[in-house]
Amino acid sequence: MNASFASKRLSRALLAAASSSAPRSSSAAAAAAAATTPAPSLSHPLPSSSSEIDAAARSLFRSPWSVLQQRGVKVRGSDVRPGNVVDRKGRLYEVVKADHNQQGRGSAMIQVELRDVESGNKVNARFNTDESVEKVFVEEKSFTCMCTMGDEVALIDPQTFEQVDVKRDLFGKAGVYLKEEMKVMLRFFDDTPLSGSVPKRVICTVVDTPPPLKGVSATPAEKRALLDNGLTVKVPPFIESGEAILVNTEEDAYMSRAKE
Image 1 (spheres, helix red, strand yellow):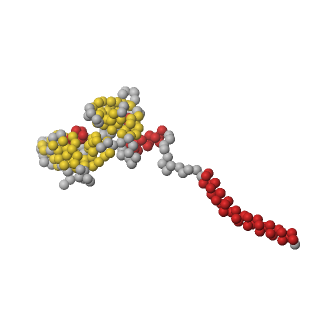
Image 2 (cartoon, helix red, strand yellow):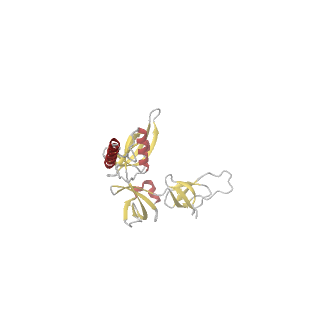
Image 3 (spheres, one colour):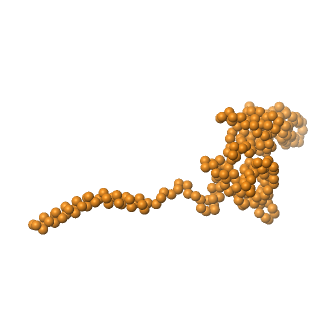
């Protein structure tokens, strides 16, 4: 009887001790779990393999103005395009022309014409297709052309109404297409305009072209037409003087009649 009573008292004491120590055991377990839990991984881990690095570089190359505002990224020579800005030996150059050439059985080369951003001087250079080139990020902003005065172009920011005067040369050969109210793009580096571009397709008026030939069996496939901006392009034989046509500004080529 006394043994049974003592056994019950011992069981109650052990149960009470276990209940009072449970919270501390849980806290200790939680602390231990927190200490051993690995740190969360990055949501965008850094690329490790060469293919991942190359893919990341190409992605940044297509979107030059990133949120991080980095200075640049390494890209292959085969990815260099006109309008890009590259860093060579500590100086910034804008790519004016880029031609891909195959040197016989040797490796392909990229023949480029570069314009020194600071001095404006032009130099020629060559890149191997797999050569590492530092492409510099630039900022692109949209402007509206107000007017052109000789070599000067007056632009206005449609958001802030700030006026910017630049040289027509910034647009390269496409500067011939500039006209009032045209939407254009300027590229900046450190708030300095580097280059500009016009829309890929613009409407021009044919000022002069030979009239369509009638009664001739062998009609030529194309003829020359003088446009209102002074440029001469090839057009189909049915186009007449005074007509508005759509022109590809990158190739200076006729595309179609302009829709009214």
